[in-house]
Length: 444
Image (cartoon, rainbow, N blue to C red):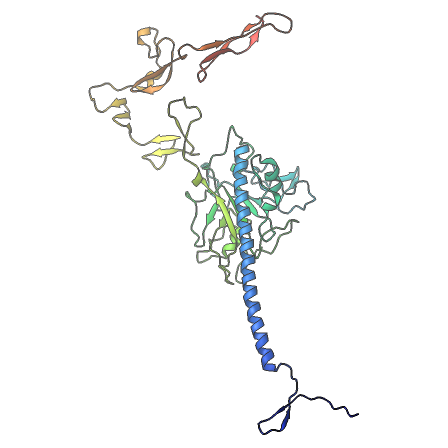
């Protein structure tokens, strides 16, 4: 038997057989496939990179906002802001992620323990002189005290991981020293006008009013992480952001000037109280900036507040300005300095006293009468029987009854542990509840 091999044949137009071999892809076809695959991969990587950037940036912004809210909660709990943490400490250290207390020791560096300096930095270069003593106030520069915020803030849901940005680096924290001083508490809270930190934009323009008045600054050092600290306390980069940048020195000119430097240097030099919140720029030059920055200043606080000593039904206000307040003078020398006359509606306070200008024949009220006392009852300037003075209205004392009508008397002194009758040692009146009770009960 003869077996013939089968071949792939076809007839040509002239009827002759033609052999066609099975061939692979040609070089041109392979090149086209590679080109298309490359384009698809490029598009995919671009979309993925944009997604990852947005994810990291969103996580950073969310954490910055959470820290900011927790700082406000901390201030509401303790009457001051938290001190920074030492960002160089490893997780095994007892003070890892905790505020360095006390931190109001500048220019001396706050200490981890007696005789052991921390790496929290004090600087008053570029800050302002808040209290007018002739010396700029200090800023403290360190890391977010995440353990302190997580454990010591009663009304916050802050978690430790929120102290790190989307690039897994510790968020930096700079605070005005006075506003983190442990001398403040709920009875003596910080003044919202005591901020001293300078924050500038990409043009070197101050972003607070008045200038250099930020309470604190929170900084994520961005994708390049230059100047940031890891969770192990290791610093990333040397703060040299581009090949043309010069080594930062304290007090160098803002980057918008002729002698300017990279704006990102302001946030990682750690040698002054100046920080930048600039437009994002990935250009490979001295304007590179990828930091995300939060800061808080007095803009959310009122200059005038209701006095805590106000009498119910009346208005009393308190000025929170830390220095002197001037009216018609740019150089006040007292807490309230009036240049000229102070007029209220139709009345005027002048050298001759408190006068009604609508009646020029009326005598002026002489303010020192408020302290006048005469042996003759008819000459005394005082309230009537059963009344007390609470202010001045219409050129005379504003009097009110010492007690409201028909106060309820709750005096209930009984027997002591030995069976002895006790008696009130004194009485106290509560105007809100209109009740009289004993201060305590004793045996005479």
